[in-house]
Amino acid sequence: MGEKDILEKKLLMFNDVFADFVNGIMFDGKDVVKEDELVDLSGWSHYKGDDSKHRFQDRDVVKLWKKENVVISLIGIENQDIPDKNMVFRVLSYDGASYRTQLVEEESRKRKKNASIDGELQDIFPVITFVIYYGEEEWRHETTLHKRLNLGSALKHYVSDYSINLIDLKKLSEDDINKFKKDFKLIADYMVKGSKHKADRIDLNHPEEVSELILRLTGEELPFEVECEEGGNNMEKFFEPMFERAEARGRAEGEARGRAEGEARGRAEGEARGRAEGRAEGKTEGESCLAKLISLLMSEGKNDKIKDVVENEEIRHGLYKEYGIQ
Image (cartoon, rainbow, N blue to C red; front, side, top):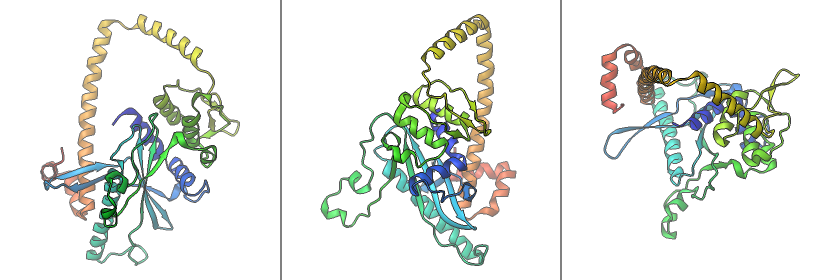
């Protein structure tokens, strides 16, 4: 996963940003989805291929929207920096896996005679997926299953259609942008207007994440944070011309780094960093494998095995092999 992907995902993991985006797209900016009504879900799901091997797929951000302990919908967001002609197949696969998981959990509850908290079985809830496109290149690919398959008239009647909710940020209108309120409004506004944008006083809850994402998406220099009288943060100076400041800072940093760092120190630091990153990467891969396995067991209703998997290395590695987790 690239750095831009990580930053896009990181920002939308915040419930306030996620709710602001959903309200802006689905409810014309009305405050319908509350941030405290959102529950994080694992993005991992699995399927069994034609070769009978288990495979995994990972969604970017997935949350349950619940009101008074009743699930209204599962909402997923996929971030794209380049057009993908097969996006409709990917979204269809993600959504299908989410419905499949619900069916498995429903069957598990029935077997255990354990309905929901109020004694009634929760019905299958809808799954909604948005694809946010940040890229420069125009998205020319089809967004419906029928068009992607280029079906003839004889087949269209028998093949169910499926469409994706593509949000191309650069094509948002001023009215669309104003339906967002804080962090995501600044992202959308800048993606449409670029460096020509003249910022209003937009208070931000996550200025560091916003500025990092803008930097990676556009190459613009990190902004200076300005503290508001109300105690929040805004980006009033974010869109000021940055070329002279960037040039001066680059010269100063380059000269300082040249004096301070020699070849020997660079080699030593590189070796140390390589060892540290190797250990960190190994730990991260191990945690990722365990997360995949736990998600798979939960989707199959095998919650009783999770404790053994966490505590017993032999059982854990045996199941890794069984499910093809590497």
